[in-house]
Image (tube, rainbow, N blue to C red; front, side, top):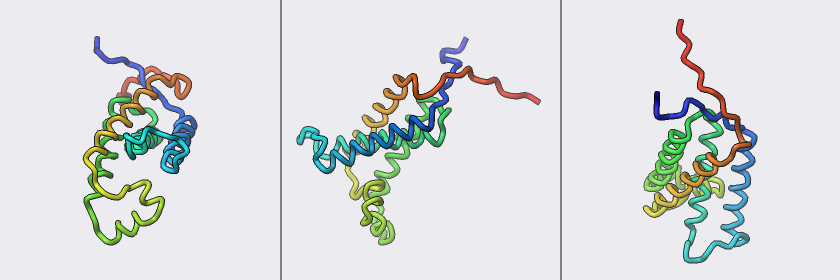
Length: 146
């Protein structure tokens, strides 16, 4: 008998979208000072929330992906965006000069952001595990053999 469960989660894209919009709203509000995080944390709560949104976006694209793979994919994507900040070509600097480009791509590599992304993706996975009404659990389908 395998050590893993034979059920998978089919996440609701509507709930994923609503969660992402809520997290984005909290993140934007925190950058404006409307959601007061302790000053000692600096911008890292926003980075945690950004990584959570990355988790939700990957889940929206692949709603049946297992939670572990989903977390790894989201973390790899978040880290890739952070390392992309080391690339300073004029065209990408122009994209980052735009507000949306800045919010999505960031501006300046910070190794501590990598830790914040681990926290954000981990939080996303925890919420995903505890969110029973956001998706339905279905038995894994055996592969079709012809």
